[in-house]
Image 1 (cartoon, rainbow, N blue to C red):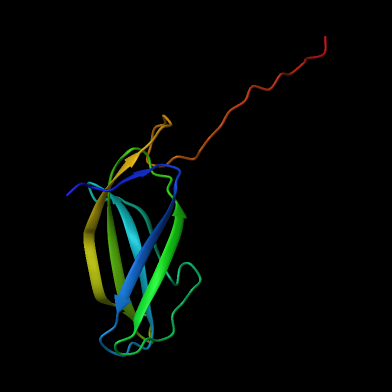
Image 2 (tube, helix red, strand yellow):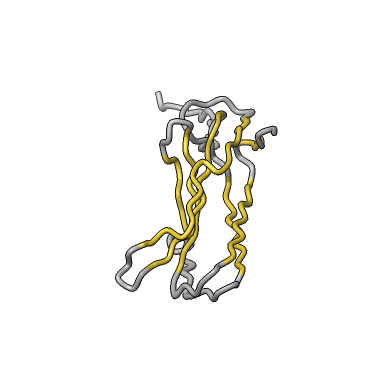
Length: 131
């Protein structure tokens, strides 16, 4: 199958649909974007984004939409997805983690170096110096 291609600078929506097979008093889910050699460029979850989850019930299905501006430079990247239970003392217990779940090609029309596109612009400013 063909790998998905996305453009640097485009808005992206990533959906996680999760069915729970037991009661979970507190959970979170999120994703990571990595380079081909495993360097983590970005990672987030519900808690980090200010949306902590309280509990889910057996057979409950939740859908989460993560929306972000793709700043990645031209290249190949892997996405990891995960769901964890958060114990009362704060320990995170993995419920399901999918490493390198999908591989995307990022296309870029702008030339720049590095891992991310800051959408930098430049303009020349004329300065008149007193004589």
